Amino acid sequence: MPPKKRKRRPPMPITQRIDEATALVPGVRSSTSTYVPHLPVATDARAIAVFAEDVVDLAAHVYRQTVRESRLYTFSDGAFDVLFDLATERTVLMHGVSMRTAPNSRDHSYHRGYPGRSGFDKGHAMSHAQGGLEGGPNYFLQAPGTNRRIAPAGNLWRDIETHLAKHPGTYAFVRLIYPADTTVDVPASMEYGALFTEGFRAVVFDNS
Image 1 (cartoon, rainbow, N blue to C red):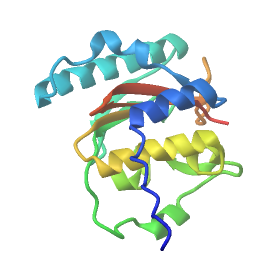
Image 2: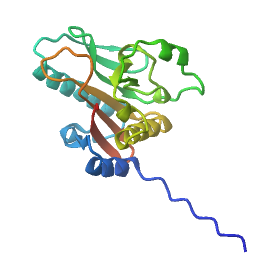
Image 3: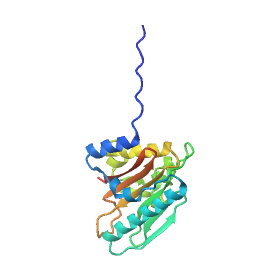
Image 4: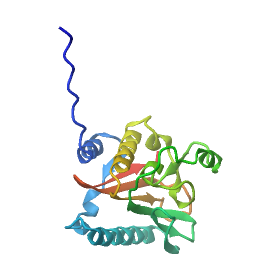
């Protein structure tokens, strides 16, 4: 008799994947509780828009507490909305709804030619696969261990990106957290949050 085929296990819900990682993976921790008082009670566009406004307000409030001189400005880069500090010329927050992207539409030559820095990847706050653009405010200096599948933290970061790419229409944000009272352009950590179908989660990743 031919051997029986093993049944594939159903994929782990992304919220369970995040919960397990924040309990076990070094340099990764949950920040979900910060947003619980602001979570929308409905899933319509208006409720999500109100939550997005709260996310921006929270990001601006925290940033102003750690940076004495700032000039925060909001705009769209054509795909996602941006909270940007004009004083230090660095992105504070990228947020919006994930979108479908056409296959093989990434501009690899632009990415290769974009200025980088030794020891860091040219990280995307919002990945191309979930609708993010190349360059501009969507790029930041990201440690390889959080950007690639070469470490547990990078595996989780990529799992979140992959999930958002497969589920267009999901509201998500990435907040870049810089050392206090500095103008350095390398974030000390990044916070990834999303209104998944299974529930809201936010995770802070050390950028190391």
